[in-house]
Image 1 (cartoon, helix red, strand yellow):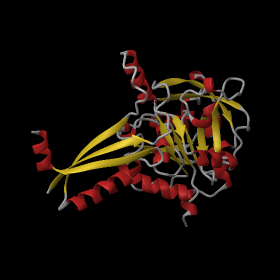
Image 2 (cartoon, one colour; image 1 turned 30 degrees about the vertical axis):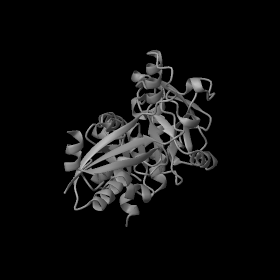
Image 3 (cartoon, rainbow over the protein chains, first blue to last red; image 1 turned 90 degrees about the horizontal axis):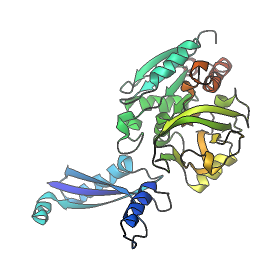
Image 4 (cartoon, each protein chain N blue to C red; image 1 turned 90 degrees about the vertical axis):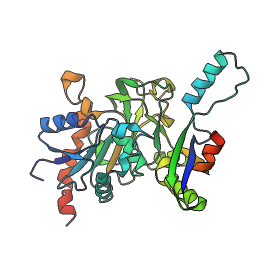
Length: 91
Length: 242
């Protein structure tokens, strides 16, 4: 069965994020005075084959631990859905 | 050791400083061999250099893909056996990703790629890599990076300081460490560190680009030449493995 995982890799709280600060400055210069802070991160969309949701979850967790995020500076979280379901939502 | 030191210079797809290291090594009578990242054996190398560049395009994170290259298992074993390892720029980033050195190198705080001559203050360490330099001495080396902001948790930084593992700090010409003299926002102005055993040095600057007077300075050569004395004092890696 095919699954789609959206993995969000985020800089840990407290680590300076000059990219986010620059984006926040850009928004403020456009007049968005309500912007307090922007934190930039990464979205990785994975498509994988797994027999069930639990297996897909376990695999994505292991990918995050071994490669996708560096725990010194980043955290990772994810959402997983069956690809058929994703197409229905998209339509 | 009577023969010339043998240096293994590791090349990943996207490495760009390997030929500079080979040039400098040849200049001073060392034997240098380029080792492709897919190889799994360092041969009879006495020392290993991880040069600068953009291994695997720096995709995902700098060094994140490179650390899983087959050659890195050999580099990890070489380092664990006490062999001299130097990682410059991208090489430093790979060493941190591999967990051989603590911390990580983040995007420069001003988001710019910075290519310049940089004054550096030599800190007090017991590492043989710094043996040719005096603690407190000022040296000048080129920097050339977009992701050199050293970051580690406070307790890791405290331990680096306590154990004398900070090798180089960004400073102004007078040797004063100031925010203005810090080219990338590195915590505690750290430009280079060594591991606890002192055999692994990671630094953002490029010693290989400051090894001939014609290109502006020879402080890098002075740093690299510490290897001569070091290798005389200890058996070669090949002999050590017996």
